[in-house]
Image (cartoon, rainbow, N blue to C red; front, side, top):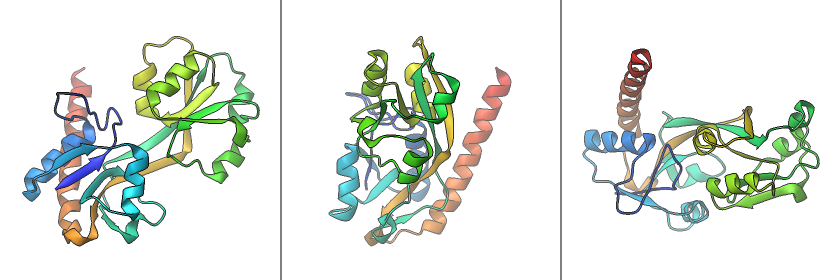
Length: 217
């Protein structure tokens, strides 16, 4: 089974000459063993991934939000692999009041990820001030160079990429929380209730290990 996603550390990590890793890939490996699936993980650009759902769907997608008309083509798990929390990462020194009104701020985002009109209105974003780039790493570079004032991305991903950077702060945008799931092409006729039961057990076990490790430290 070809199962596609895009490079999105720490959830999905693809590097040359190394097997893919990451939190969600670990879950899918355990799930495939329990379901007796033979999965091949494939990394493709986000734009191509989105187009394929409506044209020539892959057998399997993961870390994918159940939005728009995707359920017309795919059957989704009910158990999310994780919930994406978004945050604004910005140059230190921006006044507190301006963090809630982004008029005149140049804001970066990932190309292919649509920012809702409601969110644009909530933060008074001017469409001309939105800058779309192909990777989170490029967003960090642009922020460091002063070419943008901030960027919106996954909180965990952004924290990981900026953890050694000076002069970058962040805050979580709670209105943008998005759960993401495993999705299977409907022609595969997979028993999604069984998938959900296995995923639930795997995630609970994963959370217990995480809690145990945090207690030990």
